[in-house]
Image 1 (spheres, rainbow, N blue to C red):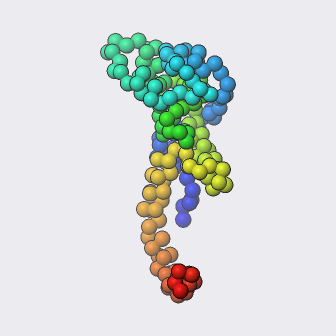
Image 2: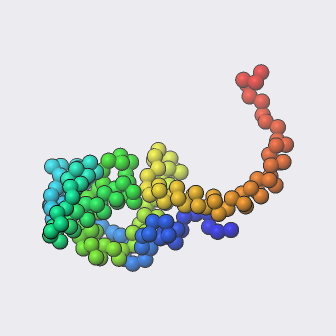
Image 3: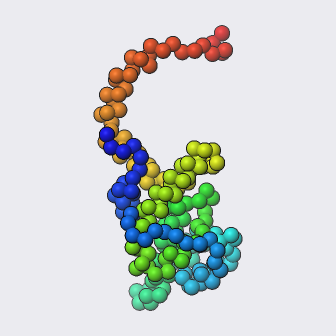
Amino acid sequence: MDEATITLQDVSVILGLRIDGPCISGTDSDVWPTRCEQLLGVAPESIPRGNIKLKWLRETFSVSLPVDASQILVDQHARAYIIHIIGTILFPDSSKDKVHARWLPLLEDLDTCGTKSWGSAVLAYLYREILKVALMQNRELKGCLSLLQVWASSWLIVHQAFIHRWNDRHFCIVNQIEPTPRESDY
Protein backbone atom coordinates (compact mmCIF):
# COMPACT_ATOMS: atom_id res chain seq x y z
CA MET A 1 0.00 0.00 0.00
CA ASP A 2 1.00 3.61 -0.47
CA GLU A 3 1.67 6.04 2.34
CA ALA A 4 -1.19 6.75 4.68
CA THR A 5 -0.07 10.32 5.21
CA ILE A 6 0.26 13.45 3.12
CA THR A 7 3.67 13.65 1.46
CA LEU A 8 5.53 16.50 -0.20
CA GLN A 9 4.75 14.89 -3.56
CA ASP A 10 1.03 15.06 -2.70
CA VAL A 11 1.39 18.77 -1.88
CA SER A 12 3.13 19.38 -5.19
CA VAL A 13 0.50 17.50 -7.20
CA ILE A 14 -2.59 18.75 -5.36
CA LEU A 15 -1.63 22.40 -4.81
CA GLY A 16 0.99 22.90 -7.51
CA LEU A 17 3.42 24.41 -5.00
CA ARG A 18 7.19 24.00 -5.10
CA ILE A 19 8.62 21.49 -2.66
CA ASP A 20 12.27 22.28 -3.33
CA GLY A 21 14.28 25.49 -3.22
CA PRO A 22 14.99 27.90 -0.39
CA CYS A 23 12.93 27.40 2.75
CA ILE A 24 10.30 29.84 3.95
CA SER A 25 11.61 31.82 6.91
CA GLY A 26 11.16 35.29 8.26
CA THR A 27 10.47 37.35 11.33
CA ASP A 28 7.49 38.38 13.39
CA SER A 29 9.01 41.73 14.28
CA ASP A 30 9.09 44.59 11.81
CA VAL A 31 7.56 48.00 11.37
CA TRP A 32 4.49 46.57 9.64
CA PRO A 33 2.79 49.81 8.53
CA THR A 34 6.00 50.88 6.80
CA ARG A 35 6.40 47.43 5.23
CA CYS A 36 2.79 47.54 3.97
CA GLU A 37 3.34 50.99 2.47
CA GLN A 38 6.52 49.79 0.80
CA LEU A 39 5.14 46.55 -0.68
CA LEU A 40 1.41 47.23 -1.09
CA GLY A 41 1.52 50.98 -1.66
CA VAL A 42 -0.93 51.53 1.20
CA ALA A 43 -1.31 50.38 4.80
CA PRO A 44 -4.41 49.78 6.90
CA GLU A 45 -5.14 52.27 9.68
CA SER A 46 -4.14 49.73 12.29
CA ILE A 47 -2.19 46.49 12.22
CA PRO A 48 -2.74 45.03 15.70
CA ARG A 49 0.04 42.54 16.58
CA GLY A 50 1.03 42.54 12.89
CA ASN A 51 -2.34 41.28 11.64
CA ILE A 52 -3.96 42.65 8.49
CA LYS A 53 -7.72 42.25 8.12
CA LEU A 54 -8.63 40.19 5.05
CA LYS A 55 -11.67 42.40 4.56
CA TRP A 56 -9.37 45.42 4.23
CA LEU A 57 -7.31 43.59 1.59
CA ARG A 58 -10.43 42.68 -0.41
CA GLU A 59 -11.90 46.18 -0.22
CA THR A 60 -8.64 47.94 -1.02
CA PHE A 61 -7.45 45.74 -3.87
CA SER A 62 -10.69 44.53 -5.49
CA VAL A 63 -10.73 47.40 -7.99
CA SER A 64 -9.74 46.52 -11.53
CA LEU A 65 -6.38 47.79 -12.68
CA PRO A 66 -6.29 50.13 -15.65
CA VAL A 67 -4.89 48.67 -18.86
CA ASP A 68 -1.91 51.01 -18.68
CA ALA A 69 -1.12 50.33 -14.99
CA SER A 70 2.51 50.66 -14.00
CA GLN A 71 4.53 47.56 -13.13
CA ILE A 72 4.77 48.81 -9.53
CA LEU A 73 0.96 48.92 -9.23
CA VAL A 74 0.61 45.48 -10.82
CA ASP A 75 3.19 44.07 -8.36
CA GLN A 76 1.38 45.66 -5.40
CA HIS A 77 -1.91 44.09 -6.44
CA ALA A 78 -0.19 40.74 -7.04
CA ARG A 79 1.28 40.86 -3.51
CA ALA A 80 -2.14 41.68 -2.06
CA TYR A 81 -3.68 38.76 -3.95
CA ILE A 82 -0.93 36.37 -2.81
CA ILE A 83 -1.12 37.47 0.83
CA HIS A 84 -4.90 36.97 0.68
CA ILE A 85 -4.36 33.40 -0.58
CA ILE A 86 -1.82 32.86 2.21
CA GLY A 87 -4.31 34.05 4.82
CA THR A 88 -7.34 32.18 3.50
CA ILE A 89 -6.02 28.94 2.00
CA LEU A 90 -2.38 28.14 2.73
CA PHE A 91 -1.83 29.40 6.31
CA PRO A 92 -5.19 30.48 7.73
CA ASP A 93 -5.38 31.36 11.40
CA SER A 94 -8.21 30.45 13.73
CA SER A 95 -9.99 33.79 13.29
CA LYS A 96 -10.27 33.27 9.52
CA ASP A 97 -10.47 37.05 9.07
CA LYS A 98 -6.84 38.17 9.19
CA VAL A 99 -3.38 37.38 7.90
CA HIS A 100 -0.09 38.22 9.60
CA ALA A 101 2.12 40.75 7.85
CA ARG A 102 5.13 38.45 8.42
CA TRP A 103 4.45 37.05 4.94
CA LEU A 104 4.92 40.40 3.17
CA PRO A 105 8.75 40.47 3.20
CA LEU A 106 8.75 37.09 1.46
CA LEU A 107 6.78 38.69 -1.38
CA GLU A 108 9.13 41.63 -1.86
CA ASP A 109 10.82 40.12 -4.92
CA LEU A 110 8.05 38.24 -6.74
CA ASP A 111 10.54 36.40 -8.97
CA THR A 112 12.47 35.04 -5.97
CA CYS A 113 9.23 34.35 -4.10
CA GLY A 114 8.25 31.80 -6.72
CA THR A 115 11.45 29.80 -6.24
CA LYS A 116 10.85 29.15 -2.52
CA SER A 117 9.60 25.86 -1.08
CA TRP A 118 6.06 26.98 -0.24
CA GLY A 119 4.78 23.39 -0.37
CA SER A 120 7.13 22.28 2.41
CA ALA A 121 6.01 25.17 4.60
CA VAL A 122 2.32 24.45 3.97
CA LEU A 123 2.76 20.76 4.87
CA ALA A 124 4.84 21.52 7.97
CA TYR A 125 2.25 24.04 9.17
CA LEU A 126 -0.62 21.58 8.59
CA TYR A 127 1.22 18.80 10.48
CA ARG A 128 1.97 21.15 13.38
CA GLU A 129 -1.67 22.22 13.61
CA ILE A 130 -2.90 18.60 13.44
CA LEU A 131 -0.53 17.77 16.30
CA LYS A 132 -1.80 20.70 18.38
CA VAL A 133 -5.38 19.46 17.97
CA ALA A 134 -4.36 15.86 18.75
CA LEU A 135 -2.61 17.01 21.94
CA MET A 136 -5.66 19.12 22.76
CA GLN A 137 -3.67 22.35 22.71
CA ASN A 138 -6.07 23.74 20.10
CA ARG A 139 -9.78 23.11 19.78
CA GLU A 140 -9.94 24.01 16.09
CA LEU A 141 -7.91 22.66 13.19
CA LYS A 142 -6.28 25.25 10.97
CA GLY A 143 -3.94 24.96 8.06
CA CYS A 144 -4.48 24.10 4.42
CA LEU A 145 -7.64 22.05 4.92
CA SER A 146 -8.36 21.91 1.19
CA LEU A 147 -5.11 19.92 0.85
CA LEU A 148 -6.24 17.57 3.61
CA GLN A 149 -9.71 17.12 2.04
CA VAL A 150 -8.47 16.45 -1.48
CA TRP A 151 -5.76 14.08 -0.23
CA ALA A 152 -8.21 12.15 2.00
CA SER A 153 -10.79 11.85 -0.74
CA SER A 154 -8.26 10.66 -3.33
CA TRP A 155 -6.67 8.26 -0.83
CA LEU A 156 -10.05 6.71 -0.05
CA ILE A 157 -10.93 6.34 -3.74
CA VAL A 158 -7.59 4.67 -4.55
CA HIS A 159 -7.82 2.32 -1.55
CA GLN A 160 -11.56 1.64 -1.69
CA ALA A 161 -11.16 -1.96 -2.86
CA PHE A 162 -8.68 -2.73 -0.08
CA ILE A 163 -10.96 -1.19 2.55
CA HIS A 164 -13.93 -3.28 1.33
CA ARG A 165 -11.86 -6.49 1.43
CA TRP A 166 -10.71 -5.66 4.96
CA ASN A 167 -14.27 -4.93 6.09
CA ASP A 168 -15.57 -8.19 4.60
CA ARG A 169 -12.96 -10.27 6.47
CA HIS A 170 -13.57 -8.55 9.79
CA PHE A 171 -17.33 -8.13 9.54
CA CYS A 172 -18.09 -11.47 11.19
CA ILE A 173 -15.81 -10.80 14.15
CA VAL A 174 -17.38 -7.41 14.78
CA ASN A 175 -20.92 -8.83 14.64
CA GLN A 176 -20.10 -11.62 17.11
CA ILE A 177 -19.19 -9.23 19.93
CA GLU A 178 -22.06 -8.81 22.36
CA PRO A 179 -22.75 -5.20 23.23
CA THR A 180 -22.36 -4.27 26.87
CA PRO A 181 -25.77 -3.43 28.41
CA ARG A 182 -26.24 0.19 29.38
CA GLU A 183 -28.06 1.37 32.47
CA SER A 184 -30.78 2.81 30.26
CA ASP A 185 -31.51 -0.72 28.95
CA TYR A 186 -32.86 -1.84 32.37
